[in-house]
Image (cartoon, rainbow, N blue to C red; front, side, top):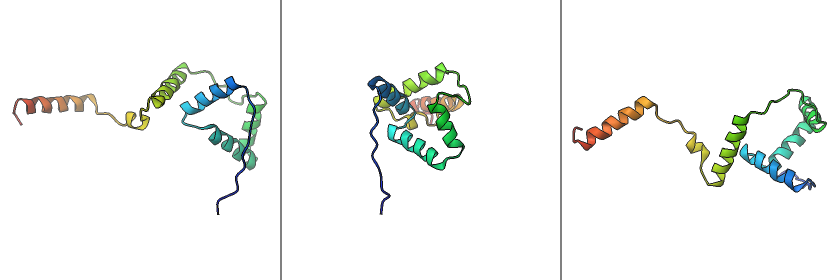
Length: 115
């Protein structure tokens, strides 16, 4: 028997929701996943809860400096997902330069009938 679930409705400004959804999507997360995580941290009431409380109260235990590269990379990832690009396949290991050169030699040798 599945566990009982509860639906939550929250009111936030539309522009905050849109910006938050974009940021979460760039990390591969849904708003539901984030809310579940926060509530699970609160339920455990350990250090995790303190981190949530500090965030809500505007405190930063570990100051974070903005990383423009990570922000730009997240934007590119978001756009690629929107275009249907499978990022897991795109991130797959690629041949080294030496392997590519060897493959080119074999291709040329095949074209010339040397293989």
